[in-house]
Image (cartoon, rainbow, N blue to C red; front, top):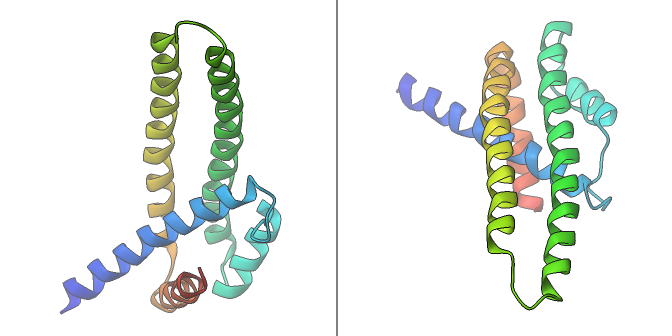
Length: 145
C-alpha cells in the first residue's frame, strides 16, 4: 500500500514538472497565464509554506525553466527564419534544417535531464503535507485547463 502511495506521489510530481514547463511555455505568448519567475516563486512559496532551503531548490527549477524558455524562443526564431528563407528557394536545404532540429533536440534532452534532476531534489525536500497541497493544486489547475 505504501509503495502505491509513493508511486502515485512521484507520478504527480512529474505531472507538476510538466505543469511548470507548460506555464513557462504559456509565458512565451504573454497570455493570461503569464507569470514571471518572481511571482511564481512567491505564489508557490506561499501556497506550500516553503522554507529557505526549499525555496532555493525551487529557484533552481524556475531559473532553468526560464533559461530554457529563452533558448527555445531563440531557436524558434532561427528556425522560422530558415524555413522562410528556404520557402523561396528552388531546393530546400534539408541538411541544414535537420542540423537545426538536431541542435534543438540536443538542447531539449540536456534541459530535460537537468530539469528532472533539479525537480526531484525540490520534490524530495517537501514534507508529506506540502506534497499533498502540491498535488491538490495541480489537480485544480488540471481541471481548469
